[in-house]
Image 1 (cartoon, rainbow, N blue to C red):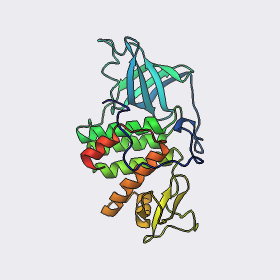
Image 2: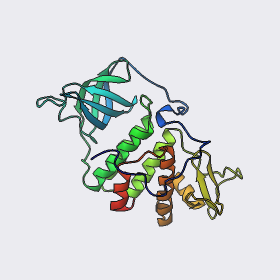
Image 3: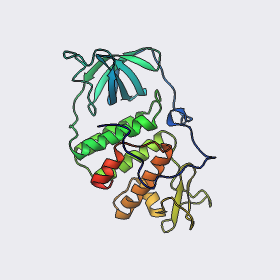
Length: 273
């Protein structure tokens, strides 16, 4: 699948000139997050998010690891026909990995296939690539997100077992924004400082949270019930499914700073996700 070839969906929000956040990798880390750069790591649970060729016989891979977050590694000789790594470094397969080095780009020393997960197929496979792209573009390297890692594993399993893709993706998108420390509280109105009400319609400021809608708003309008449902991970109401889809598209586009998502438009075209 080619990257950087699909534009931001129509309706992506304009970011105010006076209120532009730095790129994801430079944002202030949420409380409790630490930058961890070790010299040698072993037996680390991980998934391959992305890889690309490096020189003639090697690869550079982006791993999402449970205890070290997203890390970049050189897999030396991985492209050689008889390399043990050649068939191991596949996306959506649980691995145990090891590496060495002190710089941001380290050297892979070990990767073993763990197994125990169904492969993703058809639509689920495309959804998996969407998850990986979100992780690459919205997480900083060397920031540990163990809860997000566990949510990623759960999401892959749900997709592999044909759970409804729109609901599965909405839950992961929310978990991603929360665990990276950029999600606003959807249960309280930023203007009135009171709890969000079911029968009131709101607009969600990406940084500050919900406020009552205004006539001149261009952002998606969502019912208070939808916001409360999203916090509870309750997507049984069709109205919640429809409104949460538009809201998450808006919020992700804002936090990405207008950067395109290669897989999103394909998913929209195929499934209206």
